[in-house]
Length: 319
Image (cartoon, rainbow, N blue to C red; front, side):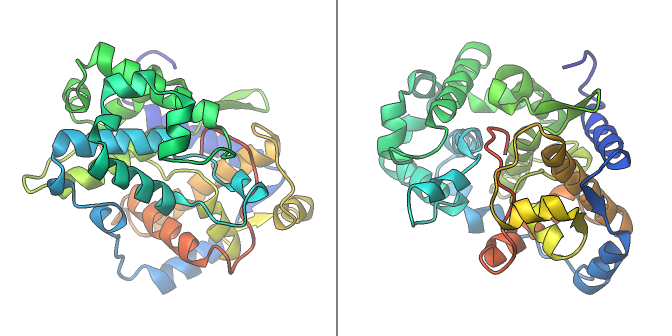
């Protein structure tokens, strides 16, 4: 992280993506398709409530609800390799269901002390299964989170919010500094690129959930966040024609051939996805936040995921 980066952390993301876009070989953005999509779909925009996809946060209290979000966002990456071991899907909704079960039966699971000492065996028995991908990394992610909350924030996730002045940008900055699995940076043609998918989605989840409390808490700077460059949104943007892939890349995606993390192709997919959503936001005259547009696109992608071209396959801890 560069010094004095809190105020311009998302500016760095956008500038990174503009650099990638202007030097892209494999991915381009079709601005005409963006205009068509906006005209047809965004006269009104309905963003699903956080509780409809998770639970009513007023049911469990703010500290436990916050702990749930920090925990799920520290585990929420790269489910697709599970298809190699099982005919069953494991998607985000399955992770939600398993963690909500922990809320009901074992709320101590979410304490900083437990997370800091969590063993892989407990993660397997309570949340995932034996052959699930990247279990070591997921365990490390929770361990680092627990250590951060325990040592710096006196065992309180709410203290994390207070210490970071209820600011989305400061939340992003602090989680990147405190937990290495959120440090989503790479190099592209000689320049450092900043993407920070999971750090930003943490801030967005907190923003959505806190608005639904009986006494709402408004996080600052949500308007500064970009979308969250993952698998699902570029999949739906490709289907809509907003993203266009060079034939050799498209063939890899369709045939589920793995694309290496930090490769030129992978970085171009993610960076152009961010820039594509920023373009949608601009065409909507900033009436909606990038995180709201992301949420709508992601939900469209989840609903249609088996009826459209596959998403790209990259083994990564960052999305």
